[in-house]
Image 1 (cartoon, rainbow, N blue to C red):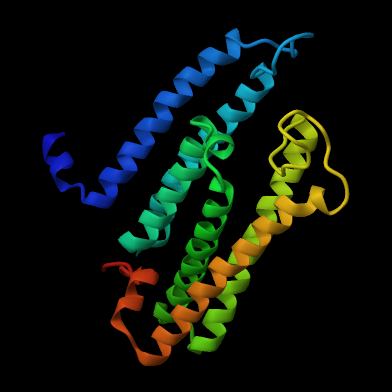
Image 2: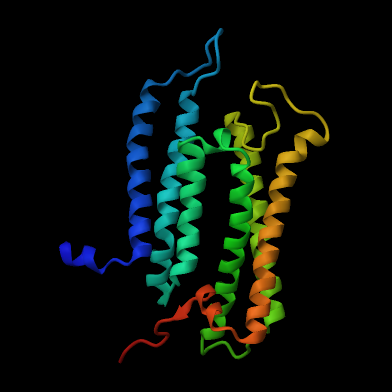
Length: 243
């Protein structure tokens, strides 16, 4: 066990810290599910309901699974994920699920949601570059994609996942009576007209900006053959089985 801990690099230590934080939060959330009220009190301020903690529990479980997903995919498909891409990925999970939802940064830190969206746009753009580069490393792929195509793909990949995230928020706002898309004020008053769309459109706009910045940087780097672009690629580990 001690030798295994010594082999962990700094990125894996960060991932381990985030995993432990979410695991502890999972235990406390399960406890709160059994103690939280089912309905809002008739008088007094709003309180956190049992349904809110159930939704939080689902998010934590999904977060832990997603945290482990890159390692599972890397082992299954036999490639390495560069430390920078993985670090961006786990930091985003930590900021959105642990800090944003569990520690309530979404409601206490101004523009926390927008900061994460522009960060996620760039992160997803980098992952888009990685997916295409993975194909370029594969000897079975007979064509190589040009930098322009890779940049466009990474941009579209990031923006599409950003749209899917807004669909997710819209769906669970309706199912669990949440306010992730900020269609009403903190006091429960619904916004009207363009005001009701402001949060969703703002999220999509910053997603686009983050993805666009990475697409431009990545395109320029690929055209100039900059070696630091290897940080945004999946490196081939061993495509052929050892005989």
